Image (cartoon, rainbow, N blue to C red; front, side, top):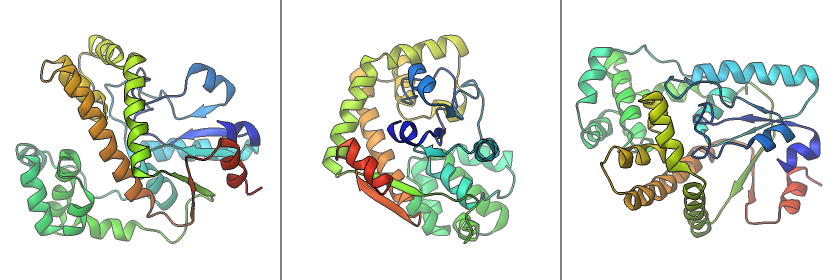
Length: 279
């Protein structure tokens, strides 16, 4: 926000969950006041019953970038979905289409068994995909069964030496203990801000969220609590654990991007501003 205000820029959300209307507290969506102060793009695009794809994100992000260029407005891409960054700046791996029969069979298999199977046919993908990430495990095995080639080989081909958009890359790094403390404090603050009530209201309004929306870290655990599968204190603890795991996966992804200037996040905002602007 400070950087956008300083350079007269706008913000492009690179977040796979902030696209959903009504999922505000749990995605740390910018407030109405913040959005009024600085224009944000790609927020509140669809209802949480909809499926939102990487391809759709790239299409809309390309339009926002082109529009900002025409208006000569700096655009700051911010967010926590590394796959969206990769698709936007390096291109997108389409892969073969879905096969309903294969997916139905794989969905009936526990995640740990899928991960063991993937480890045999595609060790590189198995290292990258968490053993509990049922959706991505299914897709990786589906691609292998349909093509006879590991999904990691396609994704290596996907890497492009030419960036789709010019950008200056800046990342904030945190020590593990400090980051974990921030995650715990953030979870507590979001619960106090009405995260549980928000989730209850979403279920009351829509009945069921889309698979993508329902798997969002935090919402998944709170839905399980509201459906009677776990007590609230356990759900909150699982949110903290899930968020820490998400942060680790994000950093592994983001550190693969070239030319990122990493700045220590615990410094004063004005110092970070100066470094970001190279003053």
